[in-house]
Image 1: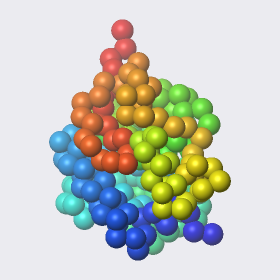
Image 2: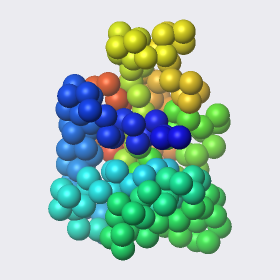
Image 3: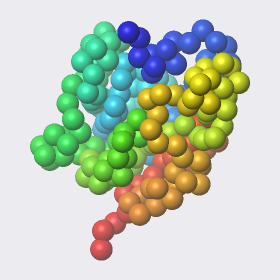
Image 4: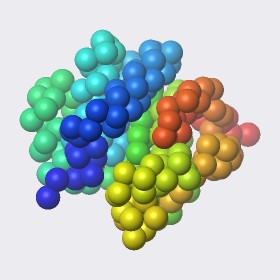
Length: 199
């Protein structure tokens, strides 16, 4: 079964393709601004975002992790030896004492039943920056509904258990992270942030 992430990135719909292309451009611009030497893509799926950053000329050491064996197999086929890819839980990286200049978590937090549990993990893993994105609600659901997707759920993807507007997502992050940039990447909310210093 093809994942929702793969369907999104391989869509033939010209509007969706244009939106995804803009998403990738904005992500690359924020990564360039942060200038990390090491990047962890947490929940990397099939490796589409790592591939986009490599194609954008981002010079960094990439690591991608995901809990899906099939997604990592697909990512390895796509990326070869250009990234280190593993089926592993982020908590294991924390336990191993790993950290990275930047941690990306793009289109993942909306899938996690208790997303607040990820914030201290992100803080431990990210030395300098995080790059995060989630669907921007209620617009994301409305756009799905208007194109006839998930009609019985009013446009809500059955895999999405969390829903944030732009301001709500900023509030969700505020205790642990300072938002440095939040470009308009409709219909998503994307932020570049840094961990707040602990007292």
